Amino acid sequence: MSQKPADTYSPLYFLASLGAGGLSVTFFMYLMFWVPHVGRPVPVFEDITAAFVSGALPLQAAIIIAVVGILLMTFLNVKSLLWNISALNRFKKTDAYRSLRASNAETTLLAAPLASAMTINALFIVGLVFVPGLWSIIEYLFPLALLAFGAVGVWALKLIGQFLGRVLSEGGIFDMTAHNSFAQLLPAFALAMVGVGFSAPAAMSLDPTTVALSLITSTFFAVASLIYTVVALITAFGSMLHHGTAREAGPTLMVIVPIVTVLSILFLRQDHGLHTSFQGHATAANTMLWLAQMISVQVVFLLLGLTVLIRQNYFSDFVFGSKTSPGSYALICPGVAFSVLLQFFVNKGLVTAGVIAEFGAAYWGITAIALISQALMVLLILSLNKQHFSANPEGQAIAAE
Image 1: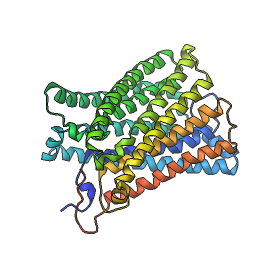
Image 2: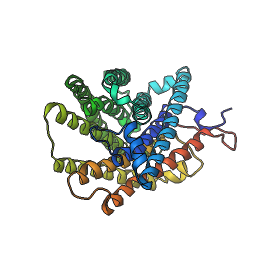
Image 3: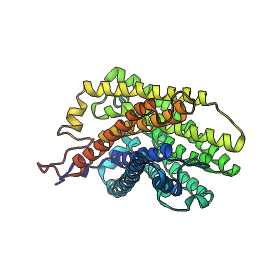
Image 4: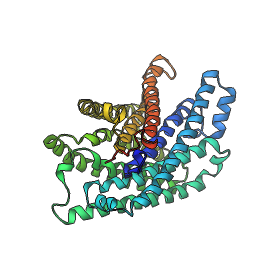
């Protein structure tokens, strides 16, 4: 007999890996914006050690927290990814898997390439932070990174093709009554995550060919993600207005938040590549306003999602109560994504445009919101891991739909 909720497997458990990987990025934001890295778009081992040696106590404390946070969250990310891959392989041999492949829930399989792409990003951060001299060979690593994301991208497109080929080739297969959430945005999220990985060389490479390849491939996945988002969003909203929001899928109402963050970072990276390699320029004012618009989109969907979740008593049942659902892990991504994009808005938007002073009172007042969001998500992932991967006191598995 199953002894813990996670024994009843769902591909949505890949979101546990995704959430941990995203949290590693939130800790990297400390280094990205608080550690000087002159001449480089990102801080590396040498920048971090130099800042730690010469920096004041608050900076040293921030570096220690960041380094420990990156290590712990990346460990959880990789550990969860490996567990999910093993569990998914076993799940594929069951009748439940065959039923999933014949339903709307087939798109939950996209959580696997989504989490895998996040792991590649997280491991790249680990390399930057912990490997001395990595920057001296970085240009040789970009082709390997593009190949890795290319493999994940093909995997994601294959899964999407299988799903769309099935539901669009014959009528009456897709259940619109079960489309009353934003769960079908998971493929768009996966495409966006692959795209942001492809965009990394655009922000960091000095080779025009590498930058151009990065710009083109990341643009394809960004456009594909946007198209899928618009279609799935419109059709799902119509179903929700008619049938109400599916209770266990309520957290998906906020999946737009991480999609916006991932695509925003993608476009910022592209802008940097266009500037350094092709003399393309965007003004600081334009960047600030655009980031403000993206933050506004996130706040709208956060308010929408929280409103519905509170009305449905989701938190009291599935987060703080006795019920479990693997979809609860979808709550982590919005908080993580909002924290990360708010850091970009403060540093690349308000500070760069001269609206606020770097490290002034206004700076820390807004940054505190990002840090609080991050802290809450750390507590949430630890709580959910305990809830789903610890033995049920009554010795019974709680179904995860």
